[in-house]
Image: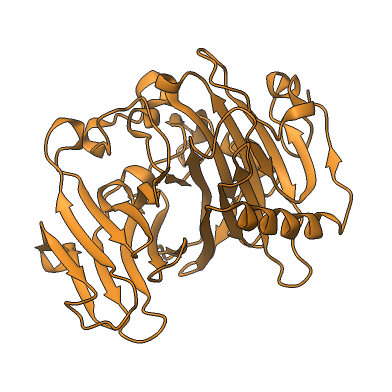
Length: 398
């Protein structure tokens, strides 16, 4: 498998422009795939590296400068992603102050198809009081969704297969590490095969410290039209579900459906424990349009990502009409709440944690119906429990 290094901080290596395709590596794939890389200029995107993968059917972009997040995607004439109010993204992290707005500054750069949240924390902002060895106290404020999405990759490489299935892989290393804090290296491999309507994200997290550490992880997958629209539906095999708060509870009877854009709409969130297939231990969720001829599917293992959040943010089209499908190690409550309920990953010295998921983009009614049948078969294993108000252990008792 030929490999091409685009960034390697350890070797002082950085490639500004890169292009490769099936012909240049003598790949006999039936699809004319390509991988390109360029540095963006102007506005808040200035200095951002962008890698575009085109597998011949499905095109998507990776942003090494923003924690190896996935930016925009396209399959056929359909956009896979959303329209963020950020406007001129992908935003260079140099222009994002994570502690703005009382810890909500993360939103200043948020416009990805998928942004990772973590690793020191991944939920709502909170303040922590710590007692020092000398008995004095210090107060530390943690911002929304952590830092990993705003840390540039220190290593980036492209690997291409010259034998079936001719896999295309973009590898990246991102380190969230500082003195007196977690020191974790994420190694990600984003892969696809020529002609496929899928991509897979496989992340491995390594504790670099000589002492035990901990981490939180949430994948913020975000979708707008054409999958999100009035009458669109969220489909999943539910084991247990609870609304995040009293506002979300007001819409509990139609949490799985979507309304048209509503300027000024306040977000609603629902927390899930999902059913897993008895055959392979994996689960899946889907967002499908009203007609049922387009959809996006996430496949993952609840053993790796046991907590799932549905985020409905259906404001005006210019405000960010979007919904989030969010597999995670925990729910996006403040970390102290999650830690008290044993939803923070413990990593021994040198320990590793792996999370993997596949995005599948559907473009026919037959494909959508097949996934719905797959979900219904898993759901048939047990009757779902639906809580009508916020409840333990998902969130504070309402």
